[in-house]
Image (cartoon, chains in turn green, yellow):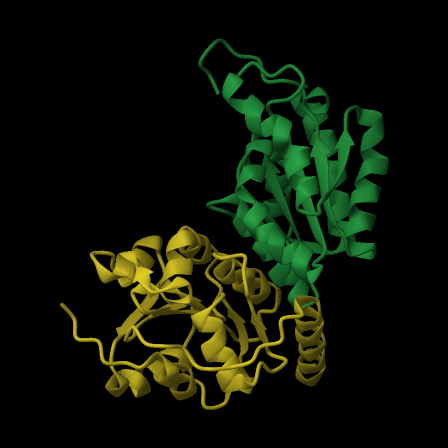
Length: 178
Length: 198
């Protein structure tokens, strides 16, 4: 995927979240969420929060909801493995949640380390009560974004917008790179 | 070896004679009991009963989202060690309205008193300072309580209070375990506070 294409869909996601009133963007850096986080840094209405572990972002979303505000958490698929314990808080107290998961270990992956967690993302999230909406192509993004935002902030569900590697474009590299 | 004489059950009442001035997010087990016993688990308290490690960043999300209110996160040494990176996350964001209090009994009291790292070599004040928390204080006796109360009340955070306490029981309390209801109670209570501020 070209840089300008990534800017385009990242802008679409960011602008829609901004319009929804999302203020906090918890994240662990990933190539897939880089542009969204840069947009959250540039806007005066939003704040990115660099996390040491993805689970922190789950708790930040809960904390924002306790005071009537909205937050999202952005992470690479490998970070989903760090979240289940904190998802007990979300499921138990019925907090709304929106996770934006950029996939590795998915279509076209060349790093074998990424496969186990990548392939477990949806089973793990579903086991913890998070509903997954997967985006495979550009044309699906708009509807998927609405479904994820509506599920979280209108219906009060725990939602994950899963941006697949087919959508993102698999990262090409020689053996050993990550 | 430091001489620890502080009974944890005396800590929260001494620090917060008027707890309604703050919003409390507590971690599971002893810290939740100490705060709920003192406040009657009032509308300004959200106390965990699980999701160990989540108290500090839940409080961070709330404090960044409501900068006109003062937040207290009360956690334990076991929970904080599990989420020690969250102190760096707090430091980088610098919420001036957040205080983190760690009630450190040096053991895992809820599960049978098994030893914790802070009973050996781990110094949580150094870890908080190392994470970049600008204001850090350590207490271990009842005589330091006025100073600790002023530390919490005065000036801007984020701050970290390391309260080293005796390995004794937490406060006795019957909690509301309906966490869906507890979330709603906190949210409604906050809305009412917000309308008073405005």
